[in-house]
Image (cartoon, rainbow, N blue to C red):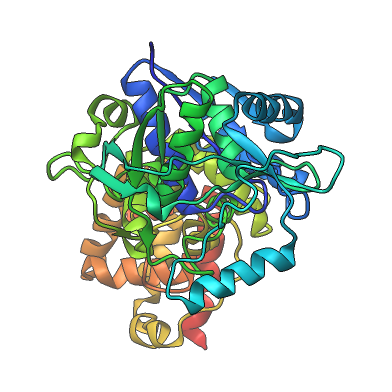
Length: 460
């Protein structure tokens, strides 16, 4: 049977980084094995499930380019199947109706705790002869009473639990709503899921679910329980995918960074999607939790900004510039600016901030820089420079560089004496890329206009 995996988030919130890492490992394993990746929305929690979260999850998966081969499949549309399976288990004797009231169950729990026992269902209704279906009841699965359950987990290795740790849990509530540990098994078996890849916080659930598989006459899938991510908080990691998208992170960077949280391939840090698919395997997934480090994510994002073709980077940059209020559109000049500025930022938002002077002349001058570099004695050289720029036949970094060197030689000034006043005039400070490329990135009229405005600083 070909590999079939599923990512099954609940639609009670946005898709956060821990969930994305789980989705990614499912996706990479499916693609590595030539299998199929299914998206299932677990929306049986009627009080907390929201359609807007479903849309948010789908949108996030699309932006990350991890669209499923099947789905999204909604559990809320499969209640008839769940009822059918409950009834089949009742008929086969693998499940039973339980009439215990909440008060009775609480009394049983308190007694167990008082006697130093693990609080679990007593089995009072397990072997009742009279089980009317018109009285309020839940339905419980009959768990094995002897022995143990062992799984050979792809990440955790061999794990065994005694059945004494388990109880006959409810598979359908009094209101007719099936429970998580039941519907997950029904769905995974119905969808022919071969590998269940999820967080290790589900490990205890696995030992409850395996008897349900067997009661349904289905062979359990192979399991891989991933260590959870540490270091998640409201400020970082637990925020939704869209939070990182809107802050100017690239999907390639998020995928690259999350792939390295718990998985490795030698000392390599940066991976293309193709490389991740080729190299991924559970033999390189560790058992220890990984820490979500936003500083490392920033580094990976900055490296991916350098990897992108400048035109691609510029196209992705446009919305962030527009958010800053700049009237821009993609063109060759914008690609040149993006290539020039990407080494100076870690996100697209940050690149928009440090590049603002290209799109607006509404900036303040750095007083200390003005005091240090805007020397009235250098006015003749700066005026000659402006006149040279206005007359320059070729508007390019090389031609501008030749002009600067010529003017500097004529007036006996080092390059810094011309370059720094230029930077101040064009950007407000002395921090910028190569001054020749900087000037060339502006329209000629805009560059000379700002330089003439800069001359006024000599008088002030």
